[in-house]
Length: 325
Length: 242
Image (cartoon, rainbow over all chains, first blue to last red; front, top):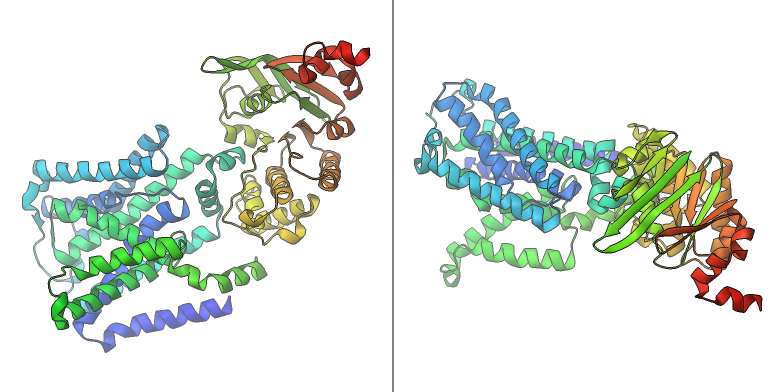
């Protein structure tokens, strides 16, 4: 336990000092690591802890991004105030999808497919209804002042992403030591046994998807404020869903640090392959090379390390737990 | 304590349970036996809320519970185990049992303490840190029992907790079940191992092809012609007597 606390303190010190020591380009990459870890964690809470694998988590991300952007651009809201509303909207969409699909008894791959379908429906709707400005997308007026949730210096965006990531880690940590979390794991491991032991499986699954949706929507608003532009493809595109799922699976689904480790690894691969493609002429035509590496890596991880990279560190953690439980 | 009246349950054209009734009084150990495919597990699952009966009623402590979902029935104080054990494979025995203990407390430390107490009652104290997946058959049966007990039931429905155990393990688990009853829990058990039923149960119900064909003390059941024929075939009772 002390060792874990020490490592966390050390990690915190390094991540706080990091942007002060490196060029802006690397600050932004660091920001992306934490941001992706954050939305990955939102997936992990439902997909990893509770075992409700979603292929369409981007539906929450896009709901958050569009809610805050519409409130801001069309109705003149302050983005900080729009942020909690966006989260509530994401939570509401999570609640709705959960109620509809779990009432219908969808499990496993059927649930995964229905989430994918919801995301696609939202993408097409965003493309066609007037209040999202359709395929044109929505532009947020640049006015880089903190009160506008816009920052001149990327270092502040970095710190905000770091803060989000820390909050998501704390939520996941809380899950590993609370009744709610224990029930989610029970549901993941065996739904029938969970029901027999007094767990209202339906209610718990609805709860977790609502929480996960709200978290992911917070990420959507953050993204919109960083890039000041969203369109249906960005906000509801399937690649973001894959990204969230991938970082969790690579790092270790159902673990606290899985999404962060996955995000760090994938971002690292991204940068290394980009650099490789620029120096090795033979690789120039393999575009994007990072996808090839992701693919190979996913195959290797599913085959050799089904619990993700975290399982490499597992052993000492289990011992530590058993001593203190 | 438990009153089951004229429960029927069909799957497609198959009548798995046909107007079956039974009663359990507080403090009893009651056995439910019958040949393979008699509908014992279906009857259990229907009582515990996993199936909705086509007809009939179930009441527990004088309150109607027919058609309630399993988690509500468990919260009311009646819990079942599974014949095919369903451990939470990826987590430890302690965490498995804690899931049951969390029914009455949200406090993690309290749930952990409760889990340890239950584990020693069923003789799993040394396996608390093993993963559910790593247990032997006997271990899994005990875990089923422990998790169910941790929910603090007043009535325990045990579905073949002795199937697949060797004679030594059976003697051990019979002792465990006696201890559980002594701690104030009423027990209804499905069992194939006749020796265990006769040594444990005060009363036995016999189910055959979905129908309740006999009820009585283990000794009177063993003499019952209908029961002998159900197990050994038509005419068997006469042959045995001759």
